[in-house]
Length: 216
Image (cartoon, rainbow, N blue to C red; front, side):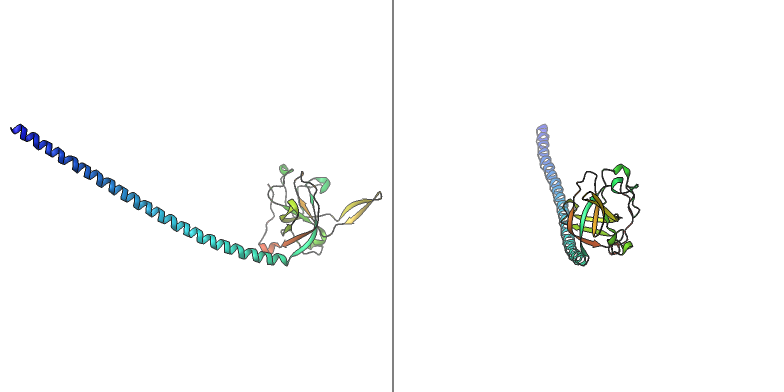
């Protein structure tokens, strides 16, 4: 009889132990889920703050960019001129005995003989350069408008020759080069010519100090 009593008591204790274990497991799971949800909420809140900051910064940048574009356009309109635009390559028959050295001292890497790299260099006719009474100097930038693949910014790094030769009726004539721009391009670039191109001058003192660069 005592064995029966002990057996019943033992079974009651086992039945009690199972609910307690289940309850503790449930509590652990609830606590874990609460912490996980709380952490997720914090992360979502932080992400929302970051997004709000990014949106605000983007709005400021857009406003600043619009303002700079207006200022740049107004400035460019006061420094606009028309010029004929041609292209040349860094080979001796189109330059001189030092085709990899430009007039401002810029040296081009010879291994890039077929490619001028990322810097776009331009030569100006002598009447446009300050050394011969013009207003353009080395280090200035010129933006070409509606000039096909030549459209965009170019750095003034070179000067064109005094004349170009034209043959008429079997006679060679030297014609002074005036109001012209010559873009240094890849050797495979077609010899494009554009007449009366609108060009915008951006003096280096307006843009800040411009250092002579070596194309590589």
